[in-house]
Image (cartoon, rainbow, N blue to C red; front, side, top):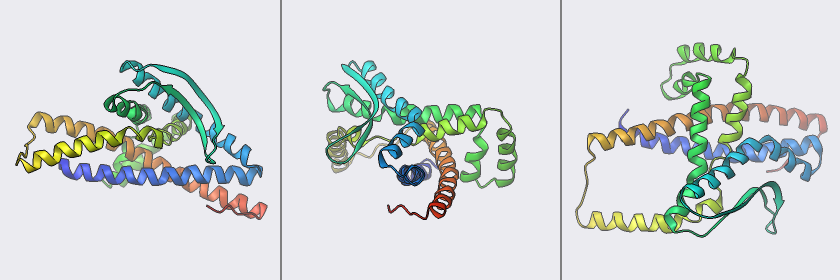
Length: 251
């Protein structure tokens, strides 16, 4: 696949993954509320469902800060209600740093989460599942997937992908440090274009970019595939519980 086409496909899959994440987060809480009838209990159910991903998210910040020489404080993995009617599921105290290091710390959960998704996918031999969505090889893809499902720990690992992948996207606080970095890069790009400098990527640079894009494309595509399956199950279960209890959650 052409490198620019791969980048466009990567952006499209990332946007779809973001939309699915918001839908899943809302409807997992809605389903928990329908079952328990209590909003606080629903938050705790949500917290427990995504606990592996919450831990990976906060520990990724901590590890990145340590590697970059930024001081850290305590890690809190626990639901905390805030004044603006939001709930934080986990926090870590990170010292002040320059925009570059702050941006890298904020990006760490996405990198770590993608790596874990790829590793679990390799363990379960789920390359076929990604191929089904990217190349349309339905027959061979589903045949290989049926073999993966027979693995004794298949559904445990699928749950871990689901929990980790849906908590690996940067939070609003994580994205705060990106603003000065984005402005700096935009200014450099504008100056380069105005000066008539249009670099051509060599074969080595293209290879590196292609590998990075391929890695992220596989991780995001696998996440989307699993999220679609989980979203269908959540929607069916939510409709069933709503009918039984004669209630409906408004989103």
